[in-house]
Image (cartoon, rainbow, N blue to C red; front, side, top):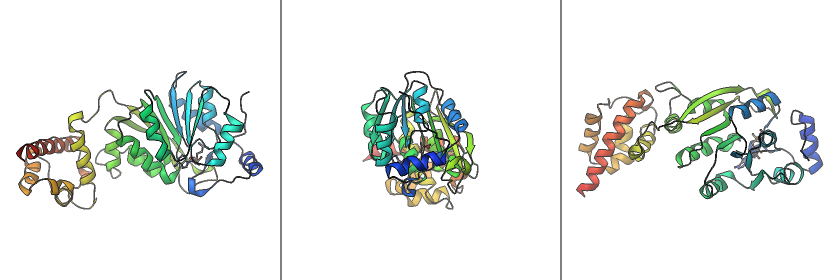
Length: 297
Ligand code: SAM
């Protein structure tokens, strides 16, 4: 039998938790998405087809999960809260043939799961604020590339992920996200749509895999190294960040000079002023220098 629950009602949520002797905890960033039209829109944005394999991070009491299952997705949900896990397993979807629950901290369990899977079509989640950014960054740093991902995150983090090049929000996270994905913010959700209401606004960030990465595979190591280094201290010039960082320790001073002369990038700029083209020129120069440095040893 299909689990029916009044996910729109804070009263129903409170009563269910009270009946089980559980309560929402701040520690796990538990804010339930109350508005059905918003949840429906999130699922629509996932562009699902039947039988696709969907990972949901932080299902809570299953407000999104229930809609995903109605779309005939195979859902694997990662939830840390033992009480919620009990409800998901025993009351809500435990007997549903398309539902799998992985209990524990997704930061620990997600990557070994991904490693064991040949196919993951979607990753989604109304992510807890405390681990949301780290988790998304970890997924982007890994080699897993589901065709579509959709996360509800703190608005500022969403804006950094989707930032335009050289804008005030342009950060290492923007480059990491946009290297392989088209990133957009199709929806912003005010705090009144959640119970309990969080202190900040939330946005839905949508990642759609690009046909071709912006960064050639052979340049990725140098590119990621450069992005991390140049944004190290935002107020410093890229030259100072590079010279005092890992790259400075790896290459002799002449090679650092060459990095700028070969790429044609102005060393006095700050990372947030660099375009994609400039990051790629620096990556390609760094890659050549690293190769000749290794060959010369
Ligand atoms: N999906 C539900 C909704 O939209 O109403 C709940 C979203 S709530 C913002 C975040 C959920 O993530 C909570 O259920 C919380 O227990 C869970 N969570 C927090 N940290 C987690 C972690 N490290 N691993 C897995 N789940 C986590």
